[in-house]
Image (cartoon, rainbow, N blue to C red; front, side, top):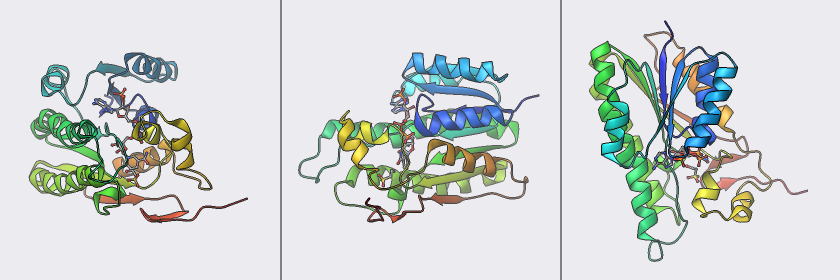
Length: 249
Ligand code: NDP
Ligand code: 8X3
């Protein structure tokens, strides 16, 4: 019997790469996101390679949609709480409160809504593995990033408490906290400004979604008695939110 994995935010970037990698590792994957066509294309790609894939189209910000889509699922062995975003990069006196709502509602409340439905299934099954995609912004707070950093600090706190809460149920909780990963993240952060997004990666070889998927796949196959609590993954040219070495030609 195949193990079952649920990956939120699989239409792009880290979530998409994680879904492809976990399918390759033999998991039957359920992938979620708001963009139905992207999920359909991912399903076709996984099935063409002999894998199994189910798609669920919903917005993690809606508790009602989360419950309606996820409650009917059967066993879930592995959950990747990945759906998330940064929106805007401004000083606190200039930020757009709609961006703040989007980040808090997705990165914090969305992750909680999904976990609230899936964790009891894992408890009932006697085990499971939850991966929360945090960020270096979960322990570093940088200029212009107050609300994104706050949301990832929340993910860091929730991951630690969740690990303690679920310990006796045999559920592992791994938080993955990447630095710079080239995905649609910066384009979303800058509201579609591709030029500004591309500039984030100038002179740097960033991580890719596949790099993060590699870490998830590794941590997922460890022996039952061994867990990775927290993994900070950086490009070799980045040491922290304020330290990036950019090569110039
Ligand atoms: P992408 O923008 O490439 O992917 C984000 C994914 O999240 C998409 O699949 C998107 O799907 C989904 N998503 C966003 N909002 C919602 C929503 N309301 N409901 C459902 N799904 C949603 O970015 P990344 O792959 O980089 O981001 C994935 C995670 O990694 C995020 O939590 C991010 O904070 C984190 N991260 C990213 C880093 C980076 O440098 N890229 C570094 C550290 C952490 P759709 O739009 O179709 O709904
Ligand atoms: C994404 C990385 O440094 O933009 O979480 O916060 S950073």
